[in-house]
Each structure stands twice: as structure tokens, then as C-alpha cells.
Image 1 (spheres, helix red, strand yellow):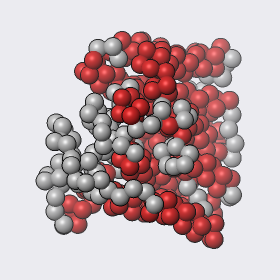
Image 2 (cartoon, rainbow, N blue to C red; image 1 turned 180 degrees about the vertical axis):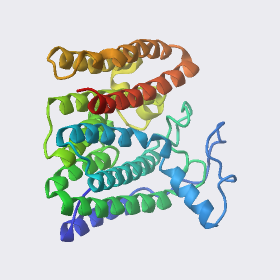
Image 3 (cartoon, rainbow, N blue to C red; image 1 turned 30 degrees about the vertical axis):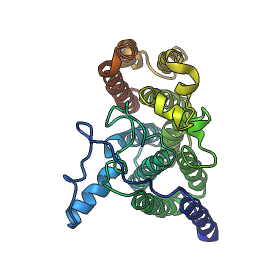
Image 4 (cartoon, rainbow, N blue to C red; image 1 turned 90 degrees about the vertical axis):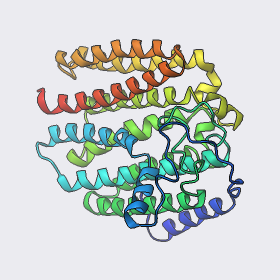
Length: 348
């Protein structure tokens, strides 16, 4: 997320060089839009309003809360420790985080189309799996999305540098790790998503880093309560990624994207999903027993665990059940994050 001077120029040059050597856009042979997918005709037009709408929707904004909420959790625990809120640090951190997330979403679409994962995905459940469909449905070209991603990431660097000036060089390390994981998730030659490491990378980039980083920005440190919250959030977002990968397993395997779901098969993935959710609850339970959190902290997580069992059963019920599972898993993540943030503010 953060770079400066000559180092930033070299990195930008490397990224541009890799993109220029990527295969050209394939011949225009787009599938018929599935119900609910973005439509080129509906989003056509050269007015500033239409253009901005296309660019905004290409970032998959409905999923940006998965990076906003972890920052909120960390900020709440940092505020609890510091006794006051650093509004400037919060605004800069949120802005930089959202920009990196949006840029990473777009790069993921670009690379998935390049390697055929999204292009050949006929089992997708829009809007959750199969990407934004902006390339495949002829709304924006791959090159246009590449350019948009670079603009967003450059803007993130700008806000990150402002945050560095405010809080010091530790921000460079935190931001660099987060941005690096976001880029290497789908970009060659690393492609963490193809090595069975994408789920862990997302857990770190959308859980451990933003929660602990946001807490540090507010208080200059982090305690056991913050770290506990960070691990639970990491597991919840990893579960979100796993259920989103299940409908895409065939197209991912064909494209060489060997996610954990592809490697373990659907039966193994279902068990992994349940295990991750149980682990998130177990971490909170241990924290309560260790008196890191008060006993009421387990109130809502018990309900979330019950919801997890129901979501797990939905995975076996075909396409309709799979969509219900995805929606419930996203709700578990959002509700859990809000609960942890509220726990920091309202429970002593």
C-alpha cells in the first residue's frame, strides 16, 4: 500500500511490464448475461455520471464492508485503550484500506479473466462468485480495468504516505504487507490463490492486519483482547472465501487455480468451513475463560455458531442452498465484527 521515491517508481514499472506482457484480450465471445448480472446496454453512456457508475460498480462495492469492518473492530479496541479517538488516523486508514481492497478486487478480475477462471465459469452465483463480469459482459475492457486498478492503488499510496507522516514508518510495514498480499493473491508469478495459500493470505490481509493495525494507530500498541478479535475476524473472512470458492471449483481447476477447495474437494472444503467457524468461536471462548473478555461476550457468538451449522447444511442443497450459505456466512462475518467492536465500547 505504501511506497515512495525511486522504490515506488521501480515497483510501478515492474507491475506495468507484467501487465503489458499478459495475453491480449480474447476475441469478443461473451456469454449471455445471467439474471442480475451487469449489462452493457444498461451501463452504456459517456456522461460523467454513467462513467463514474461503471467504474464504481467494477470495484464490487458490495463487498468493501469486509475490509471496512475489521478496521472498525481494531479502532474500537484502540479507542478503548487510548481513551480518545484519533479521527484523522481513522479516516486515512479507512480510505487507504478501501482503495487497496477495490484495486485488488479489480486486479483479481483481470488475472482471473486472463487465465480463464472467470471467463469459463458457467456455475457462478452472481454477485458472489465468478467476478464482477465487467470484462466478460463487455462493459469494460481488461486494459481499462488494469488502468483503474493502478489508479486506485496509486491513490492508496498517497493516503498511506499521509498516514505515515502522521504516525511514523511502522505504517509502511503494515501497508506494504497488506498491499503485497492483495497483489500476490492472484498476480503472477506468485498467485497465492493457486498454491493453496490464498485463504490464509485473505485471513491475514482482511483480519489480522487491519484489526491490529487500526488498534495500533489509535493506541500505539495492542493487547490480548485486540489480538483475539483479530484472529476471530481472520477466521470469519477465510470462511467467506471458502464458501465463495465452492461453486467455482470446476472452472478454477480447469484454469490451474488450485485453491484449497480444489485441492480438498467439496467434502473436505465443507469440513474445513465448519472447522474454521468452530475455531473462531473457540478462540472467543478461551478468551472468556482467560478473563480477556467478560462472559456476556459469548452471547451473540453462540447464536452465530448455531447459524454456522445451518449454513453448513445448506452447502449440500445445490445452487439455492449454496447461495443461502454464502449470504449467511457474510452475515456471520458482519455481525461478528460489529459485536466485537461493540464489546470494546460498551463492556468494561
